[in-house]
Amino acid sequence: MSEDRMISSVFGTPIEDDGLILSGPLRSPRNMLSEQTYGGHASVHDDATAQTLGFKAAAIEGPTHFSQFVPLAHQLWGDRWLSEGGLSACYKMACHEGEEVRAFMARPKAGETQVAIWMTRADGAEILRGTASIGANNPPSAVEAKMAGLSPPDPFRVILRDVEMGASRPRVRVRLGYDDVMGDLYPFSLRQKLTTITEPSPLYGPNGSNPWGKPIIPFEMVSVLLHHLAASDPWVGAQPTVDMFVDQQIRMVAGPLFVDEDYEIERTVVALSGSRRTESCWVRTDVFRPDEQDVLATMLLNVASFKDLYPQYEETLASIRAASA
Image (cartoon, rainbow, N blue to C red; front, side):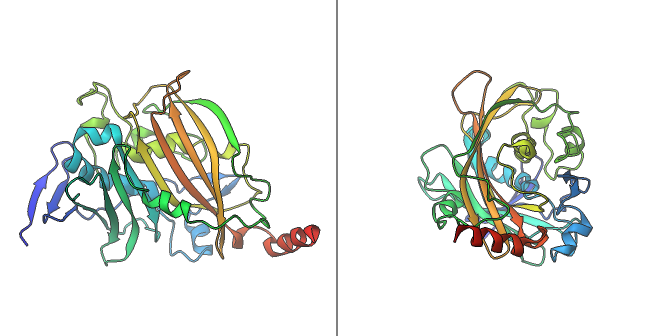
């Protein structure tokens, strides 16, 4: 099958199109969270901590990969995708600084508004798999489908023992400027991110060279804006923990979101789950203009806490079970 090669006019990204699949170039994303701390300790984005969990080095934060899909989605759906588009990803494998990864997106069939996406390392190992969509009338996304299939939460939880589904955080005002450092969770600024982002674009620049006349927040930095206050959520699990993003969805409803503008976010626990190694808290974050009711954007995020690194996890679990007998 013949293959076309083009350069995205908005991102400058080389895109290959074989008629069925769009793909971008191999990129080497940067880890900007090596100095991240929460609860007074290092995170999985620190080499030493990551190695205690069996990773060879620090993991690059999952939403960093979202930037490689944006030019592909824009190629399919144009500027409308920046206002009404979404990315939904189930992270499969950690990516480490220095590794090269490539983004793939299926072309929609007639009438489709949701397509498969996936990312592979240069050696073919799969980093993530999910969906990209435009508009509101779509089948369940990759993350929505996974969440719908969860079993009821284990009543015997250690890290999340005091966290309940439906817990919510009232609206709080947030803002992302070029030089704002977003706390201990995100020890870098948007300006610093734009020097390393895999797909730079004038859309993100201060000269307003886009249809909205003002700079938009990159998809991966929407994650920063919506999650940077997580450590002060009223339902934070027992500490200390080492956490990792496992599933994540960002969807624009009436976007995009803009640099240096005030927004309000509301956060809600929508699911609890677990695995042999982790306990997971799923949070939905809705974005509003101040004092307005219409949702501008949403994020679904599954953050998993590792049991192995919680002090005396098994002993605490046994105590909780005994107390309930």
